[in-house]
Length: 510
Ligand code: ME8
Image (cartoon, rainbow, N blue to C red):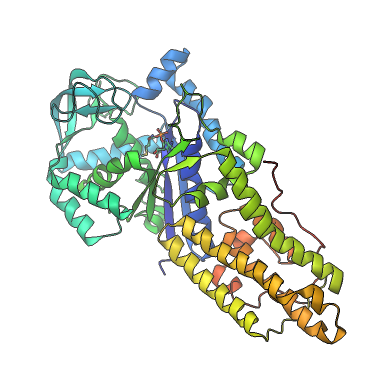
């Protein structure tokens, strides 16, 4: 097992406050970071904000403030997401920090030094909202191929990066690393794009002042994507030559939305190859959310505010819904009805109830003291075998970044444990004093199955799982438990006294 794991979110534009899309990527990364920590790895998890560029400058002008003032104000909304969503990022990078200026300048200098950057003049069709130039071929009837808005003709002196030179190295890299771009369908898309030929890329602007200046070339600032992508190495200490960089680079996963995959899977590895730095090991593109069946937009007024979700439904429920509802990588639809349904059926009924009814029976029949473990019957062995299979399935799913599969496997165990209650009928065993040992074994097995479910679900529902962990008499933070050691059957301690109930997932009125 590789002992380290470095995961990143995109850095978010500060021209607007966080919405469900930002929360989604961040939560997905957090679940992975937590999972890999519980596997015993040294994890570095980076998120942050993208503060330069035309979009931010424009919004600042509209609001009558400087871009830096705008950034300073909006960044707190993104930083606050970590506490609200229970997210465990190790650092938060802002592209306006001095450490990032040093990093971008050095990366650029290295490419310049080996001849991959040259001064030219750029002319093209420019889409301002997308910050992209397009060629004649790409614009159908004068509209941006990405967003459909009108483009304008523009020309300016610009530094270019020799992206064309990296066509073959990129294709070779994809070939050697079949899991570099995931999901697989996206890999084919990107590979086809690269195989179609790459134009050199304009990497500086003179039409813009809000950016990182290029030393020795007054008037030029670094193009926003070159600036933004570089955050991933700044965050681990580039170019300081420190231990963190050596430990964590190359990153294991850059998590991104499908709209920005190309920047990460084509431009970014090429910039790094040019500077003699190893490309990242993986880029994963997730899908987009619609809201109640409609595209999310400010004008429709249907933007989902993660802070509101946390306030109304709780962070655990929101996290669970986002990662359970939709196969990761595909698009999905967010609805309050769907969220409430998942809370009541999966969380409150299935999982919460399993623990709560077992604690109730333990209180009633054993004064709350955990009996000895003495599995005997076939149904006991089946439950134990299932718990092992589920732990393996969760591991495979998490390695494949398939959260929905991991969660559905955990729920296989939750549901099997609930069935085990019905089949073993503790209330009937309790009537016969000769069956007291058997009653004890049944309750032990139930509590133990619940404990394993709690452990496996900890990366997804961190607060509730901690509450359940404590209710099961387990010590310390569940987030700090080691999955393989703690996940072995029989880890629950006998003889401890547990509470008579624990409500980890309250029901919500529909
Ligand atoms: O793109 N559903 O920042 P950003 C799911 N600064 N995800 C969505 C979404 C939706 N409805 N809408 C947006 C940027 N997103 C750059 C990144 S990285 C070096 C620079 C996702 O704030 C979108 O796919 O505009 C993207 O991954 C993320 O939100 C950030 O968007």
